[in-house]
Amino acid sequence: MKPLGPIPDGFTAVGGELAVDGVPASVLVARVGRTPCFVYSRAMIAKRIAALRAAMPPRLALHYAVKANPLPALLVAMSGLVDGFDIASGGELAIVSGAGIDPSRLSFAGPGKRDEELSAAIVAGATLNLESAREAERALAAADRLGIAPRLAVRVNPDFDLRGSGMKMGGGAKPFGIDAAQVPALVRTILRAGAEWRGFHIFAGSQALDAAAIAETQALTLTLAAQLADAVGEPLPACNLGGGFGIPYFPGDVPVDIGHVGAELSNHFANLPQVLEHTQFCIELGRYLVGPAGVYLTRIVERKLSHGQTFLITDGGLHHQLAASGNFGTVVRRNYPVAIASRFDAAPSEEASVVGCLCTPLDRLADAALFPRAEEGDLVAVFCAGAYGATASPAAFLGHGPAAELLL
Image 1 (cartoon, one colour):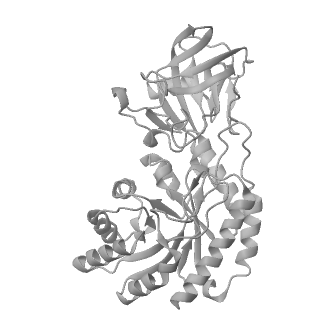
Image 2 (cartoon, rainbow, N blue to C red):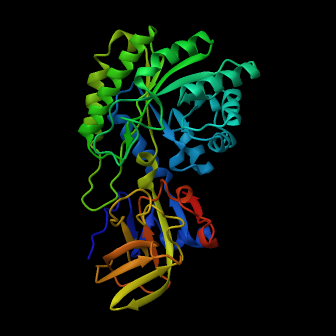
């Protein structure tokens, strides 16, 4: 038997069923009209953001990383909860703009921006986080053609990474950002060109649960930002400290101690060097804000026995929940938090594997875990589905199509 990951706080049972914001899973599925479906709780997201703001220093702004979940209704809800949005493509620029969000609240990072994406961001008034000297040349050329002063920041590839992070975004050779030693000369070029200088974006890693490691990285980031600003010879207008706050997915994972992170950052803010005295600081978070507030509901189509093992075959799978299947960057497959939603308060009684409807052995949502006995027609819930689910999974694989999405 393999243990399941921890179910996030905030979910309850109503009439024996899993409930989201007090609404039973069967009612939610009826409201959507089909399975599989994603359900996101606006109330849980708002509560999480309020707790985060209370823990962080007031000076720190909060940006939402759109890549985590770009559902337009969710973006509209987030607009009143966060200070800015971070995007990573021209497609996300269009989605956010279509949701009625002022593009001046956007920063655009990511390598390989096409010329049309650079031009669209400049016209919209978004801040471009430049990933290379060549990208800076192309952005300045596009701005010259358009007759617009671009808003430019430099994404720095630091010499350190976020210790213990699931994905390391800095340190050593990386496709992301500009090596720190090359940054001052590039910034001076940007200033001479007459661009609106917007500062640094320094992102060292993501999906970290160690508060001490996050605080340590933020301290290193502030030191690096000050050194680079001194080398440029200009005060730093803004600095994106990156994100990195993870969420518990697997057995044994514990939540980030945001109180510790906030206290350490407050101490650093109280002792900033002069070059950072008037700098605007932000962090960008995606999965931390929305991940625990989402659940993926899929229905059991068949209960099957093979060589003495029970398989609960669902109408969902990795084409909607690639990460839960273990095929989104994990080296050793471990179980996400999964439950029989129709029997949420029932005692576990059998070992079973939850698998999807795709014709591949990779399509496994829970492996040899302990569940209440489940039957055909029961609903299965996969938790931590608010981030990197619907849009980070191969929805077109084998032609089953996308899942429905509902924001409560």
